[in-house]
Image (cartoon, rainbow, N blue to C red; front, top):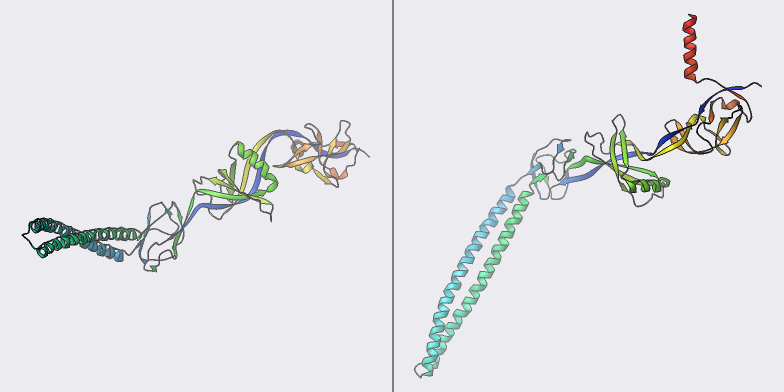
Length: 377
């Protein structure tokens, strides 16, 4: 047999990025169900469905009339109780004046009794009157304390009523994209009942993806050196770049994978909650890796191998270890050196020791054929 015609390539070296690829799911950084904190009627909605809303922006307005009435009622009670405080203080002042007068009379009565001028009964009457005014003063002082407590209770009720009034203006708790309005104007709502609208924070935003547990040590090692750069590409969209922010604390035993989460600034809203995206994270760049086209790699009973042409044009089987694929190439970790000639086409006609004739690359041969055709014409 003559030499077998084949095509061949040389094994080369390249700086190969060490990447991990996965399918990710876009998640909002925050999701808030907006609910009413008081029972009332919706009188106005100040935004459109799907609108971008800012934190603190007024979304819903509720009927304020019942809460304004409650404030006015409590303010009236406060004025009444403040008047009672002043009245009780005046009574205490009056009691104190009468007490001083009756105590002076009691002291004179005791002196006159000791001198034999007043009778014992007269003295006891004056002393009893002084004791009565003393008890009246203590009672009125207690009335002052009670009225002051009532004033504080009224003030607390007014503050609570004003707080309830503030809840009739429902504001956006976060900046984000508003969903569908669930309850329309005119409807009565209960406190902490139905969700009025859902707001999703989409800037920044998360992309969650999973990797095989075998890749976890590699991810942790490179992430410890610097936050990993993660790229997410939605179908038909442009690639967004973010950074790894979260590695789950447990491996899913049912799938043998672990969840990771990357954060993206998402300035152009390319990433949308619930969307599936292609995720790629570059761990490092491995320099001077031996690579060959993946088409040259064959699989046999003993694993991966390639056909290698020697200096004498004879071919031999070379077992190899393939680390991974990169673009259209396979990264070889052992069994092959850069510069060796590897058969890329015609392997089915080969056997160990067979001589080969290496044809020119397709591009070169096609170009030569076109040139000769032009000359012949």
